[in-house]
Image (cartoon, rainbow, N blue to C red):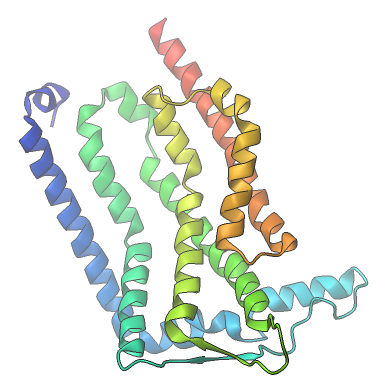
Length: 271
């Protein structure tokens, strides 16, 4: 659809177009979620419950690193002193459904981004489309990197800290299945969305809501927000928050350069 045709579309036409894009996204999530639903054993036994096993990749890596730097077994994990239980009739079925939907969203994310691009791209000029070439690929890669970061870094750090935390020897940790699933789900999805920061900054710069000067000026405030986000998606220990904050700070700095690049392209196009 050409831009002049977009200008002729009414508000209701835009809503109708948006509705169909959203319907396609929902269908994609449900289809991918259905595949995840049928893969219950693999998703729960190997993926979801993987970080609660002492031989999980992250724990093994930390143990090897601690041995190499002379800390012996300081970061080695020998046990996970907690159990996971389901205390409601629909607990396991509910967890199965929500994890299937979550995996459906993650798997279908490139298609969701494609639908978003299909909705907004007709309203762009050809030079704007060319400058945004690769948008779907880049945003999908960033999202999946964030998901992996959430799974291999945020999730095991959170599970290890909260699972082993104790205020008294008389209390044994019996975590409800919904609580455990919710922690893993929020860590993975939140990390994936946070890694979309450069893409968000790109479009905010394109519409004039963000400039490199603004991002540099408010960098100190952004760092505070980063620390708050790190505290939300990680356990309340300083080491974990720093580990999570570092890539977010790097993404923020990359976003500044992206904003500068967009502003430079805009100024060159006006000459």
